[in-house]
Image (cartoon, rainbow, N blue to C red; front, side, top):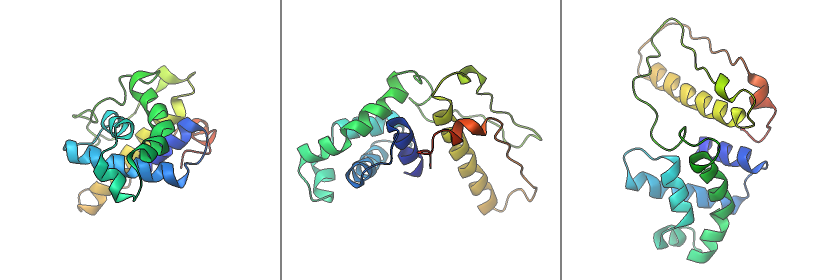
Length: 161
């Protein structure tokens, strides 16, 4: 939810309103109920076609819930059908080995794109979650240093939380 909120805020260029955050939250629940791994396309679909149960959970009307999440849905849809198409339309790629002494996530193809900060937020959040799971499982015991080489792309958009 934190990553989706950051992505939506970054794409909209502002902090989400409480009703937008709530619509995003119930959309994530719906997406999670549909598949073992929720993806951005499933969340977008749940925002654009909210269920009566989602509206009931927020004590609102279905049409109001659709309105509350519409701007968020349209901006997140950009990640699936717009300039970031292909990066967010499925589960995280399997097979990335983070046990190597050095791992580089090369995002240079988007260096001149305004989407670089959004992609970096995703990559950083994913990496942070992986490192947290590794630490909580007791595996590892080695020091990890994460260098965010192009941190200016993250810092240039204060909406990325």
